[in-house]
Amino acid sequence: MTLPMKAMILAAGRGERMRPLTDTTPKPLLEVRGKPLIQWHIERLRDAGFNELVVNVSWLKEKLVEFLGDGSRFGANIIISEESPEPLETAGGIIQALPQLGDRFAVVNGDVFTGFDFRALRDFPMREDLAHLVLVPNPEHHARGDFGLEQDRVIENAAESFTFSGIGIYRRELFENLDPGVRKLAPLLREAMRVDHVSGALHEGQWSDVGTFERLAALNQG
Image 1 (cartoon, rainbow, N blue to C red):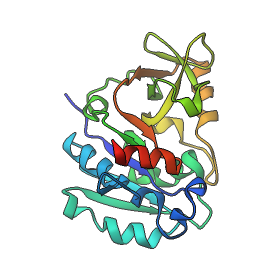
Image 2 (tube, rainbow, N blue to C red; image 1 turned 120 degrees about the vertical axis):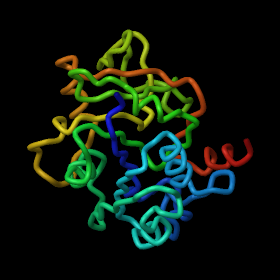
Image 3 (cartoon, helix red, strand yellow; image 1 turned 120 degrees about the horizontal axis):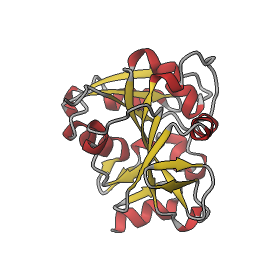
């Protein structure tokens, strides 16, 4: 039986490398092929059965809140997790939103563009793992990658490494009992990897970290 799962879209970042565009437009509202990045995520998550979405906001949050509304125009229910002007980083944002999330939930970075089928996350059996990460082949701008993948286990160091896509499933236990505030996700993941509690899969389809003008332009030309 498929467990009901919520999904969180991380949309609180400043987008420094995309200035001056992000001086007036939140990065998740930058358009790719005629549609804001975050709308692509909302629609693809909705189509995969994720109708309950949490979105964290910080920089230019009023614009994101106005665009998202309650999610009804996208056929979804959207809950806003509002952060201070100083974003809480990935883990910090998840910890703050934890009361709105279930025992296991999907998370996707709001500044990536991908054709990944989110249905794979809804149906994935977590067993005893604390996290399941979607990895991708290393792009040119991140040639060293992040983590290794041996069969379905994500490890810190390996002969071949891959890049974390910003897409994953997490158990509440990974974040419970941690103090609120600014906190990065990578140290928590590495700690879980050391006790073999992180699984993973490789996505070799469309994926781009929309972190520079050049990558945004390339997507819009494709």
